[in-house]
Every structure is written in structure tokens, then in C-alpha cells.
Length: 73
Length: 348
Image (cartoon, rainbow over the protein chains, first blue to last red):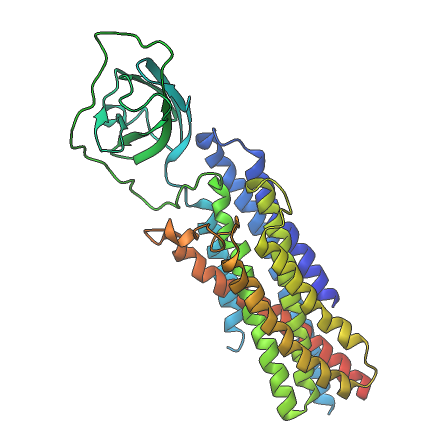
């Protein structure tokens, strides 16, 4: 359950972040805003990859535990 | 290797983030001012574009006022001040319709790079018409309109850049449905096999479906705040979704009310199947019957697919659905394996 809550919070902040950036800028400045979208993308990808790395580590821990139990039986 | 689908999910989501955020919007018009004009007078319209190349394309830029019967009025002056701003002047002829009637005209702008845009302006009876000799007349002329080139998402008024949310908010709901149906199927398998591991998997999938549903509701509210004006506008789909999620949440309340694991599994499996079958009519079918809704695909609002004529959005949308579903399945799988380990450790 804790995993799910953490994931939910992380995903939520991930999803809200690019939205807040888009709202902060004005519709007028497209030329300048193109540069800033890369910042948004970089932030989003960092958070996303952070979550994925967490999931991979969790996955490996569980596999290790499962193998331990299987070997003991 | 057996984890290929997890990697695929991550790759698809990376694609959805990169393509979803970097592909630009098609050129469009942010605004035209003024929109209410007086007949028989000269007028200068200030036009503001978005992602337009008005200055670079000045040579090929054309503008007209077009009447309902197709006749056009050519401008007297076309002044381009920047890539996104111009001022176009017309000498409006006197109205041919009754004084109380307000005519609608289309302001049409076109250049070879950006394609063409249209904006509606209204013409009311002028207070004192200038009898200028320079008054233009409506002409019958054929014009060449261009289409914008390049990979770009549709420019939608009011949505603007938030159109990109189509790749994040909507696919989460699709993922929720897929996971919820999977949970119901596994619940059905539990009835047949009576193995507690199916009950644990159904619970894990249901938890994921609930999480996705809550995330979808919150992200939808954030999107709504900046397009519909408020986080919660009692939009039919919003309300039905909240009801549906409350019903789905009952599954977890029900589970916690049982001590005996077998009874818990049996009763909650039945409830799970019921809960997911209420979600489909609530979220998908009932909103279509609503008289008024701001949600695309409900009430009188058309879906994004009607503007996505060249399928640029679909190209990112469908992979995003698969990506979110696979990621959600991964998390549900981890949740299941944890519960199973806990179960095994308690038994031993």
C-alpha cells in the first residue's frame, strides 16, 4: 500500500509540474517559450526516471526475497 | 527476457513525454480586436497570432473580410509589426441589410507557411456613415488558401498549449479501465479457482485502478481550472466520475470489514465485478446524454479527434495509453508480489 501511495504522490507531482509551467507563461511569447519547454521536459524526465529507478530497485529486492523463500522450501 | 513489457512501458512513456511536450502547436490566431465594427466606416483590426511567421511571410500574406455569400472585401492597408502581430485596415461599405440586423463576417488571413485562419467579426449599423469615395466594394473573387506544413498539434482556442494534456490525463483513464477490467477478470478467476493468490492480485489491480482514477480526477480538475475557469464546475462527466470512484472505493471498505480471508475474498470479488461495471456507463455513456458539457465527447462538445485531422495527436495518444497501462501493471505487479510475500511469511 505504501508503494502505491508513494507512486501516487510522485506521479501527481510529476503531472502537475509541467502544467504549472505552461500556465505561468503568457500566450504571447512563443519564440522565447520554446527555449523554456526544454527545461520543463528535463524536469519531467528527471522525476520520471527517478520513479523508474525506484521501481527497478523495488522489483529487484522483491525478486531476491522471492528467490530466498523458494530456495528455503 | 520476462520483463520486456516493463521496459516497453517506460520507453513508450518517454516517447509520450518527449513528443508530447516538444512538438509545436499549429499556427493560429490568439485574438482580433475590435470584433464589433460599424458599417460604412474605415476600421483597423489588430490581429495577434500564435506560432505564426507573419513578418517572414509578409510577401505572401493576404487578408480579406468574407461575407456569408462568399464575396470578399480587400484591405486598404496591411501592416505587419512582428511575427505575431499585424494591423489590417478596411473601408467597410454601408450595410445592405436592415439597420437592426447585425451581420457576421469572417476575417480570413493566409500565408504560404502558416496556412489560413478565420475569425468572426460583427458589423452593426453605423451611426453616421462617411460618404467616402474610397469605400471598397464586395467582390467576387477566387482565392488560394494554404495549409500549414510540418508536424504540429491542432491549435485549439481556449486550450492552447494545454491540448498536450491529451497525452497524460486521458490515457490514465484508459489505463484505469483496462486495469479495472483486469481486476474484475481476476476476481472472476478467484470464484472459479478459489486460490487466495487471485484475490491478492485482484486487490493489487484494484488499488492501482483506484489510484489512477483519483489521479485522473485531480489532473482533470487542474486542467479544468485553466480552461473552464474552475477546478470543479459540476460538469456531468466530473460528477459521474466522482460517483463512480466512490462506488469503486467501496471495494476497499468492504474488504476491511471482513476478518475471515476466504469470506473477504469471495464477497469482495463479487463487489469488484459490480463496481467496474458501473464505471463504464457512468464515465462513458451517461455523459454523452448530458445536454451541456465542457468535456470533449459529452454534451454538445466535439472530441479532439475532430480537430486532429492529420493524426499527429493520435500518433502520440495511442502509444501513451499503452505506456501508462504497462507502467500501471508494473506497479500493480509489485504491489501483488509484496502482498504475496507478506502472506507467505505469515503462513510459515
